[in-house]
Image (tube, rainbow, N blue to C red):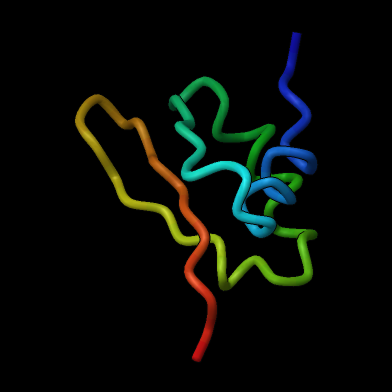
Amino acid sequence: MTPDYAKLIAELKAGTRAEIKITPAEFGAFRAVWTNYPERKEIVGTAGRGGEIIYHYQPVQ
C-alpha cells in the first residue's frame, strides 16, 4: 500500500510531523505528489545513506 504523501506533506507543514523518510523505491510516487504541491520549495530533503531521503519543512524567509 502506497502512503498518502499529500497527507504526510500537509502534516509536515502543519508541524504535526517532523520528517518524512523516503526510500529509493518510494521516491517516484513521492515525487509525483511533491512536484504538484504549491509550497514544494519549503519541503526540503537531505540525502542519506543507501539513497534514503529525509524531508522536513523549512519555511521560506
